Amino acid sequence: MQKKSDILNRAIAASLMLVLLIAVGAVQAESFLQCLDRADKLKSQGDDDGAIAAYLVAKGMAGQPVNDARIGLARLYQKLARFSEAEAEYTSMISHSGSLDLKIELAAMYVDEAKFKEAANIYQELSSKAPENARWLLALGVCYEGTEDFDTARDYYQRVVELESATSLGKAAAGRLQILKKTSDSQQKQQAFPICPEFGPVGLGWWNLKKMPIHVYIDQGRSTNYRPSMRHRVLQALQAWQHGSGGAISFVIDPEDPAKEQAFNDAVSKEKGSIVEMVASGEELPEDPIKTGIHIHFTDSLEGALGLSWTNVFTEHFSEKAERSHEITRGHFWLHTNCTGTGKPLPEQETATNAAVFESQDRLFADVAIHELGHCLGLTHSANQSDIMCSGGYMLSHNNASTRNLSSGDLASLRQHYDNFEGTGMPTKVTRVGKDGTITIYRDSARKPSARVENISPIKLATTGAKGGTATGVAPMPPTNSSGGAVTANNGKFSDILFDMQSRSYQAGLQKLTALLAKEPNNAMALYLRAVSEVMLHKYEEATNDYKAVIKLTPGSELATRASDGLKKLIKH
Image (cartoon, rainbow, N blue to C red; front, side, top):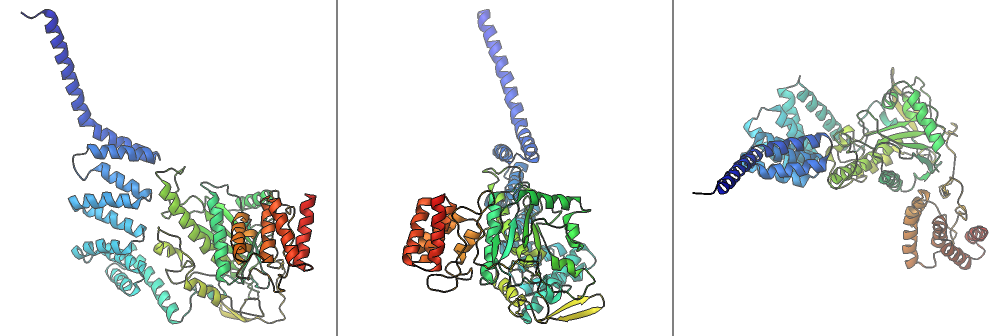
């Protein structure tokens, strides 16, 4: 007969085993659903790292290759611009299920990536099963337009219009057909722009090329998700158009003035309506206490826009006055710092998980910056999707892998727009469309140019210290080099370097100058510019040596005099 203690111990062990089995069964029955629910909640709360971890655990618990955890993971990867990982999830699930809905999601993601051929393959498959489905036909039109096969795109759009002319799909297709017609007309006429007939050849006006450089003020970044790289993107946009003009258009960066900057923002906020509404209606903006040519703003509230531009000529367009110079003397543009290409805000913080979203937004920001600056230079929208100046749908051809540069069409637009009138860059006659018909204004040499932009030599550097004052030891740029030739921002050898210095990117300029001097050690101008850069970087000993080298190489020249002045200031300092 067993001892009571043994029987009791076995009973307890059996009870514990039963409880354990029940508990394990409960965990197995509930854990997938609980984990999936937790992942969904974390995603809704913006915790992408936690959501991905939970989805991966739930995915491992799922019994089928296609499940809600895997779908949620694929969609989150897509949201975070982790396209290759999203594609792997979608293609695996599609291979097991052949799901139509998953194919549609994958095709839409391919369009977001500008993988138009891959998207077209899926839409072709869908269309073969439903040849009268206007949705698939419209999508195919978009794909072929993205690959610049405009004839095929036009055929698909026309079919959509025939099937559903009164629906939103039909109207969207009709709109795309109009753009393609303008593209075709522009190409046949060899005219790069405009597709905006209401502005006609006036565009948004002209800067006077005799009054270069254009002074630019860049706001401090105070808006949501502003990053220092955004200022760098703006500087790159300035440099791109400066190079695109062959140096005929140049820029200089003005020193920071936070008080005046805030005063303008306060004045704008007091106006009725949003800045978008003000610009769209042609309203005159509040007076800007920052007296500059182009004022660049960072914002997180543009109501459905990634960027926005305004020039004084744009406002003049809405006035009844026919006689005007069409000279741009002031420009503003706003750049959205917290908006993705889909119009959604960025995550609150950048992490390893969502880094691709920020990288994609950075490339998008660069494209928008160069596009809006083109407007501030007077260009309207182009008719070609490959141009950075293409109309609102210009991001259609945006490739998430890289930032686009100015196209040959963009450069042709600039050349065509800046026709010459006595060296000003303006045309000899201006035609605009008025309420009562077309009005042509012939320009003549008796017209006085606007005096609202200060005429400053493009070789003068706006070098400032941290507090906005002139930096110690920096002498004005000399008008000639050691060989007697003019030294301007148009000089190919120094244009990049001068731009770096004007933009206060002294370290970048210093590196280029050092590389140049390695090849040309006796280049006095390079030595002088390097000395100026070194002063700004507080490398006073190096600057002293370079100033002395300039004086030794070009004794008695104006360049040597400038170097001597800089040397004296360094000694006092």
